[in-house]
Amino acid sequence: MAYVVTENCIKCKYMDCVEVCPVDCFYVGENMLVIHPDECIDCGVCEPECPAEAIVPDSDEKAIAWLEKNREFAAIWPNITRKGEPPADADEWKDKPDKIRLLSDKPGQP
Image 1 (spheres, rainbow, N blue to C red):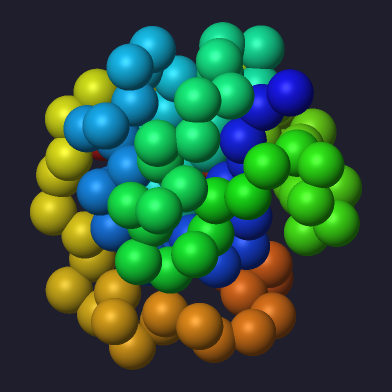
Image 2: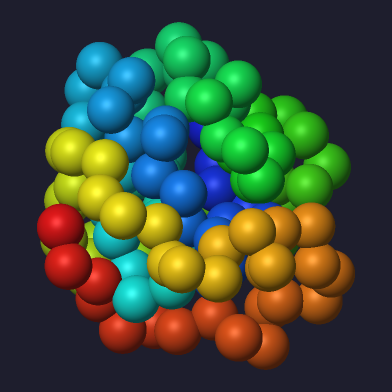
């Protein structure tokens, strides 16, 4: 089992989750984070840290569409181990629906 970052992270990218991860399994894209599902130890400490409630266990129905996206992007995006600054407009994007069309496949800065 693993945890998965879902659509709610797009354009929010708060990064509170990054610093609590004991195995550094977060990867950063231009406008979203992902968890490498093969590195995640299923400890769950990241889930309550996410203000956007974008992190769910892979057994959650919301994770189905995102598990492979997390795996795919974790393979090409840089690893992130420290919290950075979220986007200035993160709060405006929090809880907005249908953000999938805004997902960038470009890597971010760790």
